[in-house]
Length: 294
Image 1 (cartoon, helix red, strand yellow):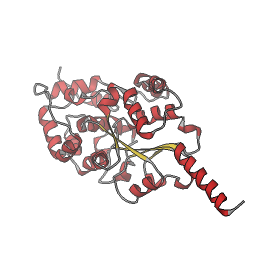
Image 2: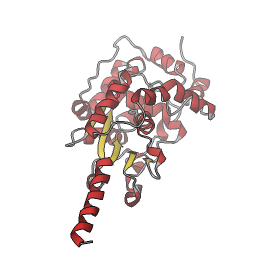
Image 3: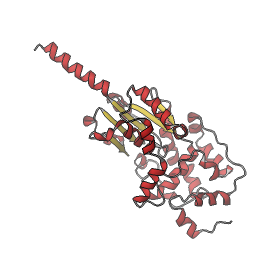
Image 4: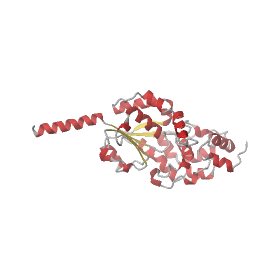
């Protein structure tokens, strides 16, 4: 066999592999629905049937680049910096970035933080979430955190990727409203239909089912999959607090296209009762040591 024939076969094989490749990098700010989205993608494309097919990494540079399968999904929370940008391009990943109203994100971080799953986000850049363990949205500690450089660093993840060329953008609010349509739009960009219908993937990963699974594992209340309701911040943050936080992150609000339109009639006592009623992680500890006016 001639060298030209051998090269043609090799090139043809590589081209075939590339045609079959479905590599998705979900790179977003934490608490934007990333895990839920990854689970639906994995169910639809069966990524976890392959070694390293489903990755969720605090640090994207821990990715096993040399042994990645042709079909995989990788989720991480990391700024748009080199060499990550070049590595994702070299390994032919389609970058997907989710965004969510920044105030909903910060409140979701607040309820999630006591389980300490956040401490390696951005490898501790500009601090961590310890100062807000077992606090409420009305506390001085939360307001300091929500307007801090740590909060700014986390919110910047989605904002930086959102405007990047070629990035596939998904709003959490749209994903909640119509997950099948949102997933189908991504499939068209990938040029690859799912192995399992998206309807089945969505049904298998309903919020209620994911919450039940967490509770069965002893996580009460459910920490990772909490409320999942867009706009919840309007019942948990007073107008003054919401505007202070939004002003601190005005560039992010502008880049992502969100506004701050709080409920001006909401007072602190009502907001705190709403928070405790939702049973956020750590709220029981707060309630046992604080008396909230009726």
